[in-house]
Image 1 (spheres, protein in one colour):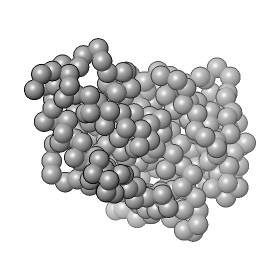
Image 2: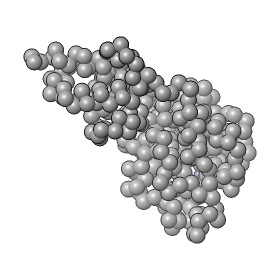
Image 3: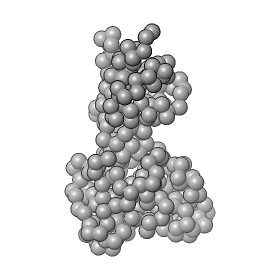
Length: 290
Ligand SMILES: [Zn+2]
């Protein structure tokens, strides 16, 4: 997999920490931290030997990437989550204040952080079910390994979406506090280009999720024929096929499309996935006699 550097992010590689290879690729997640300081430089100085992949400063509007997204960061001190397709993000600011951040800051984080992590990293727009909490909000202290806000290791492994250091098992950090990640993800999804309409073979326009859903159904119907195409699908097409097949068969078109978007191979847009799938499906019926 080629190194995945986010467009628009300043590239700042640190010596001796090129990123760790992932040992798991499923369930992509973004793990948010706050730096407990006010500058990027101060934070980098502090975590120089254990950097995350990304650091952003929503006040000065800076976006920096230390490690490509196809490799793990070090922000959890090499804990198991680091190498499990977990994108570590340091946000400049203080955990005790994140719940007070204005909507403008949340919008910036949605558009400049959450959206690229979704589009290039495949992180679904899902907030960890326990929520992001600030100190004093819960009837128990957050800054202990026994905080009920923490996930179990198994829950962490299988979760895909956005969570915080406060949810990591065996740790006593509680950053990034009561950050309104739900609102951040709302902003991330409010992009002008959505909803995408796709031109169907009958010359009419259909919402993308409907088209994806039909293609998923076609794929299941034509499964044997697609299987018979061994050797005639490109690596890229094989990746898309594997992705679509791994999705739950249901009759909810919107959920299906969201799953496609969430599981999308990194670096591929919905349009490219659609094109690849479309191409295979068009070739499939000819691959074996009717
Ligand atoms: Zn942290």
